[in-house]
Image (tube, rainbow, N blue to C red):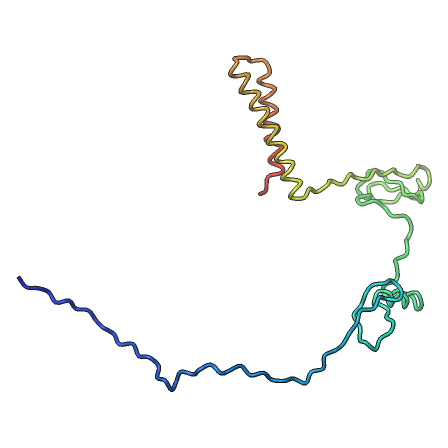
Length: 190
């Protein structure tokens, strides 16, 4: 029998020479000539808000109080003056109403003024729309948990009726479960 020789390749790894490798230097401390500012905290003379100031300062007035005082003395800057009310405001979508009577007595039919009917009718009473409350994520999760608990309770009751062989009340429980599952879909993240 002929034995096969093991052919393994050996690679030589070159190590960097001693002259190329640098040794870490010792840490050196450099003295700086920076001044260290000495400060202290003083409350604002007007509102009491604390501010950090130089030692030479005796009293201080904060930025908010400065703005308020300058506005009181010189008035608001140009462009920041409050808007003046220009007559009665009409509700959004007033021009889509079949008939809208303004507080001044002007009568409008589908957004077009009717001068011959001026001050012949009472002003239109507008009912404000109810704003829907937006639930936070945590409130949605709590509401979802409550509904799931109620679904489980109804399922257990339905299971008891089915197990006992009673048909009375099953349809009612099934409808409740279906309506609750529809309600849960409102609160599920998508």
